[in-house]
Length: 345
Ligand SMILES: NC(=O)C1=CN([C@@H]2O[C@H](COP(=O)(O)OP(=O)(O)OC[C@H]3O[C@@H](n4cnc5c(N)ncnc54)[C@H](O)[C@@H]3O)[C@@H](O)[C@H]2O)C=CC1
Ligand SMILES: CC(C)=CCC[C@@H](C)[C@H]1CC[C@H]2C3=C(CC[C@]12C)[C@@]1(C)CCC(=O)C[C@@H]1CC3
Image (tube, protein in one colour):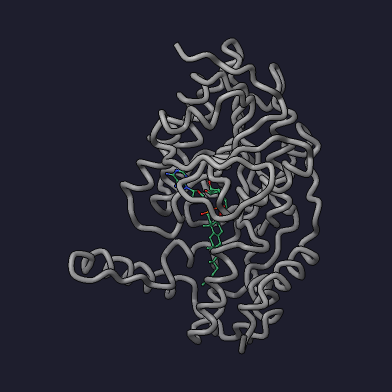
């Protein structure tokens, strides 16, 4: 049997540490004095003091060396949410998370903090001040959400105080900030193609967008408050900026900050949703012949046209969470970090 190295409480591994959220988390963990390893299928940067282990999280044997002597693991890996590859989501988010749980327990890891998503309760209809008690979506809006639900259930069920293995899930929503490969780049790409002219619905729908540094703060607080008998054991926590904003106001501020026009004309929600659904079906039918990637997927239309904001009262009560960076400052810092995406750049 392989000898176990005694876990140190300040030694942690970030699975998915090469990604947008993972890298911000790694940087903040270093600031807070943690010894950090990254496990990822790719290495996207180098940082003094960070050890990279390259491998697929679905492979338990590949994971084990990255978990030796580690007491705390953050799981922030996922396939790109916009993908339509069902088997990839199943393999990585569900089967892969099973492998992560087994490897953690085999290596003697004591705590696992999962980055789940607030969208595990979102079915495409309004959610206002949604609490964690809301049931999981019965009809998840896409494969990403479907497998994030299964992933969260697996992780929370694995929490076992008797065996000394504690788990918690953090559910952020609409993460944005410097180096985000999704929200701002997709928005700018849509604007550059002249498709960012329309507001879906009346534009009054409120949504949570969460600055990446606040998500990182929530993840670290969760790790530090996750102890035997603490209320965090086996529970999920919403982490947001706690400042719901009109979806189209937020988009307009980012667009105008980068020199693009804000959308002005209104289109009825159900018309756009119906068209997006038709396009999605068409893309599915034509898939054997040609791969179409519509900009307006039913999921994006639902995210853009409904209320969906969440309460983080539970995180405030159980781990003293407060967002560190307010929304306005976060938008300014994000816009400034994308000089290459400015109009005319
Ligand atoms: N971006 C957002 O708005 C939100 C993201 N989340 C969750 O936050 C987490 C991090 O998301 P992002 O940083 O935005 O994504 P990202 O795509 O920037 O990072 C994901 C990382 O996971 C790695 N990865 C993917 N498959 C892997 C595999 N089989 N083995 C090892 N590594 C693998 C990728 O290489 C990448 O570095 C994900 O779990 C996502 O579901 C939750 C709510 C909102
Ligand atoms: C209408 C239009 C073209 C909007 C562009 C912005 C979108 C790219 C983002 C708006 C809300 C974002 C969001 C996510 C991805 C990017 C957006 C759709 C997630 C689906 C990412 C993964 C999650 O766990 C939930 C996020 C919800 C919000």
